[in-house]
Image (tube, rainbow, N blue to C red; front, side, top):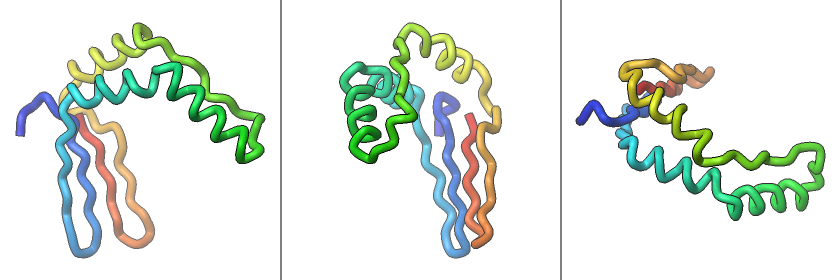
Length: 94
């Protein structure tokens, strides 16, 4: 695996899975999440559930770029590490 990836490791009682996520996909995902169409879709879904107290804010793509650049420079940084009561573990590492 290349160093240009985020590694998502999932460990259950019977299996261990490592999912490499290239930064290219992270950039594409951030572009989709910051699109006006996706924000409108999310807000409509929230309104249909009757939870109008929360609205998804519009985030500009240019505001996400510095964050993504910083993430790519901090290889090896542990973002998430959690263990459920059933023994399932989730680790997200840059």
